[in-house]
Length: 384
Image (cartoon, rainbow, N blue to C red; front, side, top):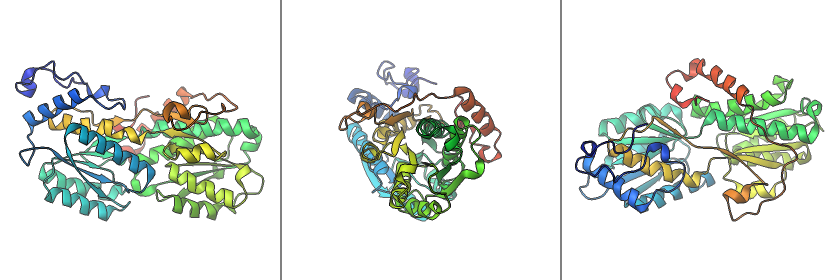
């Protein structure tokens, strides 16, 4: 990976000692004021602001009232303010047509850069065509768009982590034989295409790697539409298919979907039969107050801006940035929640030791590389 400043010639007269960051150094921490000043100076040397004064960025949020998205927006706003960037925010409302309209508005307003968070894979190409024609750089969050830098989840690994944790917890709770009589409900998001599908596919593969002999016809897929409400409805529809007294184990694309599934199970009087593992760790209060919501895979959306704004400035400065920058994930549970969110107290350890089966995961990755649906996006499949 190239250094931000290889030589003075790369960034005009800017001193080679001024930039010490490498794209690989972005681990979620907010960069310093000095680093932002250096990045802004380097960017202006290579590509001055279109208005002649200061950079204007657009952020098209997925939906502005979802906790994950609220935290993402707040982090981007904080970093834009620290860097002296004007930020324009729009709401894609989980809708491809709305995302296209918002993208067109950024082109009309002649912004310098756009951060896109939009859910409909079918609109990615037409949105990018407009930005490319206008010469506007783009980073896409979680759902890739052709030609945009990708930032977001390590989908195969985060999904696999969640599936493994759920299976190990369920076996500790009920025993392997009873688990294999149970049902695994997985909340998908088909509209977002094959990349987020690597997350839910990883969840299933991780679960099955631990729950040996689990019948695959006991895996039930539901379309969450990325919302709590739809997940509640769909889970409510499938509970009647699951016999009384057998385990109900749930995984989903995000914490909001898991929350909806959990509420449906509780309303049906089946809470004691259930265990859920989320994705995102942004519904922390639910995680610490609902005993059957046992863990979530941390994405830390409040830190996304710490990556996204520096990435945009690096690209404006003409610095090589990897085509995909992936989040580092951890399991967040009652035992360690205070380590990541100090407004909550840590609690008891789970009744088992979480172990990640690396060899099984690497075999799963090998299968993904042979998947024809993922041709052309192999860079979004981690190496290990």
